[in-house]
Amino acid sequence: MLSSILLIGALIVGPLTPGQLKKVERLEKKLMAPCCYSQTIYDHMSNEAAQMRDEVMAMVEAGKSEQEIITYYRMKYGETILAVPDGRTGEVAYAVPVSIALVALLALAAVIRHSVRNRNQYAEFGNALPHRPDLEKYMAKVHQELSDSGL
Picture 1: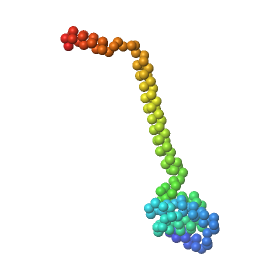
Picture 2: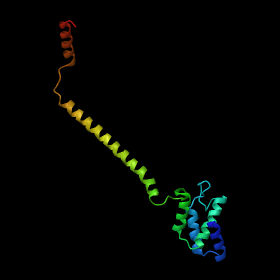
Picture 3: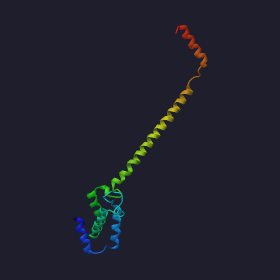
Picture 4: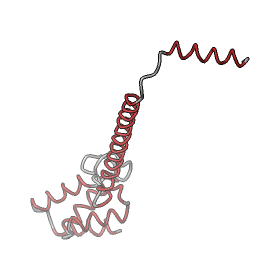
């Protein structure tokens, strides 16, 4: 109903100015075709996209601002109607994966640092041990004591 009224109003007022045509084109490139959300209404050739192009043209000719027109379609279809997410939704879409990647890198760095630190501690501990007697002599003594005890 609204689109019919706007279209009739646009036909009565007359052709669009070059500024209005640029505004229509910008809006058509910002709005997705609601039939499949695969292309903007600027590129899509469905009946729904054609109807939206007519509505956008009529709204621009009626003096609506870009924000008013975008808000109208967001209220009607939701955020998915926008070719590029608007406001915080777009920021969150980029911030979440970047944050996860940073946390993963910090965790990896902590694991590597812990591993290197432990390796150095064990190396220092091994170097601090006193010199042990020859292993063969030690093992011979152990065997001797075991045989003397009857085990």
